Length: 52
Length: 258
Image (cartoon, rainbow over all chains, first blue to last red; front, side, top):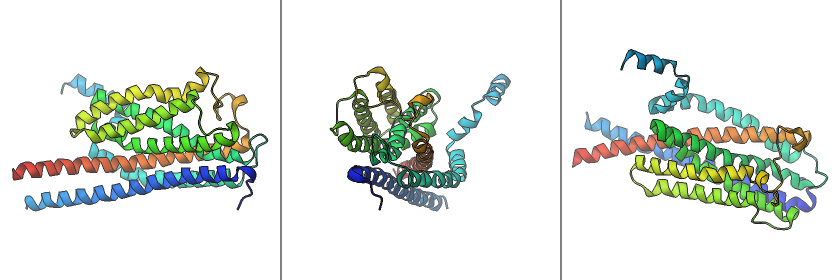
């Protein structure tokens, strides 16, 4: 653990919020990407089934 | 197509860009470059942040709070630059009607919103010990808050309109209007001198720059954050293209069933 003196709370809070938001954004992006891919695959499969 | 038209098209120096407008080509090209961008992002972002957090000394006037710049400056720069990217994509949509560019602008909005929130919070946390307050109605802070509201409004507008082309038209116009505040966020410090916020941390004018010991890891972190943006933008635009295709297939299914 670094000794950040009297600014420790400010530094840790800033990093935690910024990196937390970025991680959350990455997770949302990956989840939406996976869902969109699954939905499209299902729609393409239905289309293929209709057209034999 | 006439011979002259075909020749003009072949000579268009922006052909490399317009190739991305074809959804099939976009998916193919973006799929190929994504792993490379992700790799470069990991190679720059992680070392930049580790260097900035663990291996930079305390500053004379700011103590260890100087380490906040490694998350504040890149997120603030991206918050503004992402809006500018959305502006360019929106203009391409309005002028050339390329769907991928409208979808890229839509895909970028959540990234820009996240960066704006991160910049506002990290700035407020840094401001309290330095200025004695978390918030002041300073020109740059205020224009940044308005930029945050524009991001929210932009995303809400996309969600509120069913027809994708109409949504793309209206959000593009909103993006043009919001660009005033994106530019103000960047240049407000230069216009009004009474604000609390200091000038640019990085500048071509060497006298304004932070010293090299802080500047070098900061540049690395900025490059890393920018590559993170490109990675997320490609991923999110691919998601939007897939959603559009799914929507088209489902519409056709419903019409066939009717």
